[in-house]
Length: 426
Image (cartoon, rainbow, N blue to C red; front, side, top):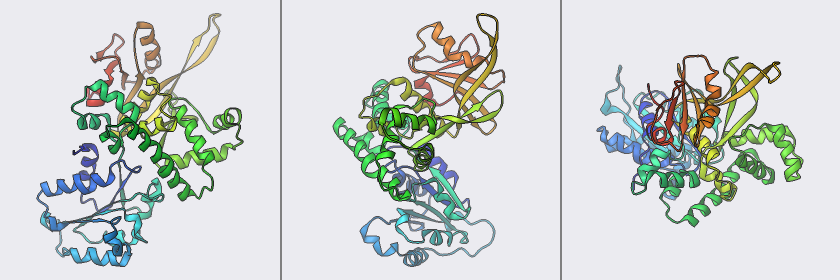
């Protein structure tokens, strides 16, 4: 079965011929190789590119072991290419597309790839999956000539496309429980799904982090992941986590160590940090922050599929979806003055789930699993009503099938509409 990855594929297509090395990043098993070696290759063929001009190499294949030598690889790629000597725009039929999978197996791969930046008719695409390559800073290895395409696990839209036999509600329940890693999506046995996710986290992701940062013991890192997994959607900071370790875990770990470990988890693409933004003051607040998992299945596996609370899972899913569509997503804070019951002035602080920016566009988003009555509606929209600028305000609701504006001018959007069609353009 072919799983469509249209958003990521469009980004790859848009990056063609941009004079940079396209570096496809993302956590293990999220579909990077499939995107490059299958979907992108098919796009090139559909565009009329000759098969002889698509130079693909899987460096993990034992048959290609000799080409893991940088000079041998350089010589082999050169042998496939006829360099374009003309001036002006390179004609379409003269382009060569070099697609290298598991490039980290090649020593000094940066020098090999940078060697092709001066050849006008060569377009290079690479991916990798070791501890070093699964890091945000890998892009710096290309001396400012690397262009990152970050691949995520399947979105809900892609998951539904892979399971046309399921009703939306059943697909949503599976997705929020087991996440969007392609292999998990295609697996039908629940026990196999759970075993795969647990093993992947313990035997692969944690090992990658240990290797990259030379962590001798994984106990503290493992416990930290469990703390973050149990608290998605909640504000936290290293000091608060330090106290949790002392009181709940009985472990003494300094906040600086916790801060470093959190940065390692972010750097390895397992979690993302959402910082707080003062909407009225137009400034960022350093702490506390929220942490969300790149994949819900991995999060649930870490805590044994026990804390499957729909409100927090939905918030994590909405956050991931907003990031997927190119928004920079912060946690909003709205402060305003009011009076208490005795008439004394007081400062009140309210939270907006997400402040989403993309270019000149801004949207304020609340995530609400249910709006059963007017009281709950007023609670969810209270912070939005205290924002007086002209940007769009949206409440995404799981128990609604119809979307529209309420009497206060706020867009109420069903979760299904949001996941399948995105945020409204109007």
